[in-house]
Length: 340
Image 1: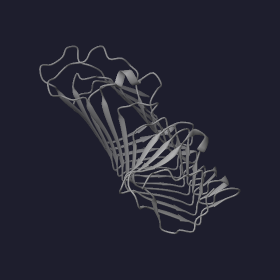
Image 2: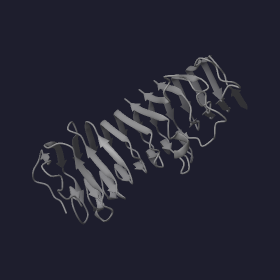
Image 3: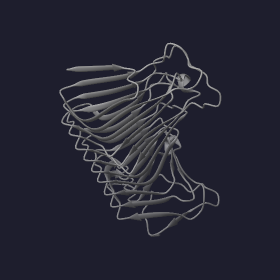
Image 4: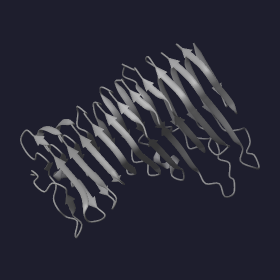
């Protein structure tokens, strides 16, 4: 069965179960601009979707401000949720929710930036086009694919004046067989993604591609089977602790930095690489020298722990890292390391 809702203003759905449903909710611009910015809401609380599809399409531009709260939302048994974010004014908050048991080629949770062009934009004095998408205290587990955040190649011009902040906080992403977390912003310049106090445990892998504004703070990546975390053509900033433990890969067991990527370490950063293994090279950390991938230290004495990492051929702890940071150096908690 299919449910389609267009501009469902100030709607609340609670204590409901959807089985074998396709639910499409779309927000589009009002026919005319108001003299003051209207505010509308959508609230889903204690909702379960079973073998169902949920799509939220946000394309209303600056016609109004949309607030979406999704609390205690349970996506189970082949259900998946997709969020299409247009060049619109919104705040979206997902909390205390669970997304699990999608053993197909679909991501259980997918955020994408829509290229749908808006017919017009309303102008309101002192209103800045800033939108937020917060995911907090939620779990994504036992799927083939976990979370995907993706742009599209021809979109940047449509979002040039629109800042979007995506925050993943206090979440557990675990036991997703192929990919736990995949981010590919396609170089969207005004999208900032902050991941804090979050664990990625026992997934196939974690990948960050074509992304210029990713921040990690108190993040643990453990027991991944296809490298702990891969960076490609991206800039990632470590604000606090990043722990990579018991991950395995071919090139880079814990962390692989490729295709001119840059890992920036702030003064409060703290890196731990423990019990990672690469079958070829870079058990703890691998840097692709041919693409000028780098680790940049913004301060000196940043703690770096390398314990019991191993590689089949080269660089048990580190492969490809060169010291080129002026007066800024790591504070090695265990000075006896293996590097190539």
